Length: 170
Ligand SMILES: *[C@@H]1O[C@H](CO)[C@@H](O)[C@H](O)[C@H]1NC(C)=O
Ligand SMILES: *[C@@H]1O[C@H](CO)[C@@H](O)[C@H](O)[C@H]1NC(C)=O
Ligand SMILES: *[C@@H]1O[C@H](CO)[C@@H](O)[C@H](O)[C@H]1NC(C)=O
Ligand SMILES: *[C@@H]1O[C@H](CO)[C@@H](O)[C@H](O)[C@H]1NC(C)=O
Image (cartoon, rainbow, N blue to C red; front, top):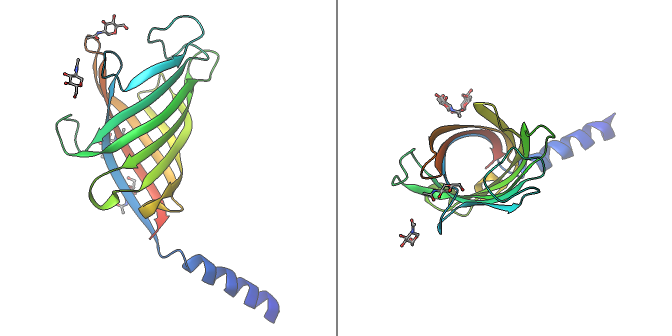
């Protein structure tokens, strides 16, 4: 009985070594440019042709898109959303998303979040998992919802709003 108690106590103590569990909410805006010399989202493999058809099963994309504080692309810079997504449903309804949110300014500078999951391409709001993090976000776990709030078909430019809710130790 005493051994069991000591074992539990030891576990509890090692958890505390990480600091305090806290909840953090972050809202940010990701700006995607799909064409031109300054494109931030590009096709890296497309089974049928090479134009922008993200619901083609097997189509692969890579992105390195700026993140800002508000929907205005000139608003304060936060960092970059970098990663890949692959259209991974036969009917194109979802893509496998693997992203690093790399924070480059303010209190989260140098920290990253790992976001992944099934991005429901035809849904207004997509939900992905926050599976891990570094820096301020070590041991992060949570979820992120995103919605395309602006899309300019002519300019091939879109803005997505992201709300991230997570627990992490600090
Ligand atoms: C974060 O957002 C969630 C969901 O909207 C809310 O329930 C929670 O109170 C918020 N937490 C903080 C610390 O703001
Ligand atoms: C691409 O970016 C460069 C460097 O910021 C800029 O000078 C140029 O005008 C941009 N081109 C377009 C088409 O936006
Ligand atoms: C983000 O949160 C705000 C405030 O709760 C809400 O109005 C908005 O719809 C949310 N957007 C997404 C993409 O979750
Ligand atoms: C937007 O993308 C389409 C299809 O790829 C292309 O034909 C068009 O020239 C692009 N527009 C601009 C402004 O780059």
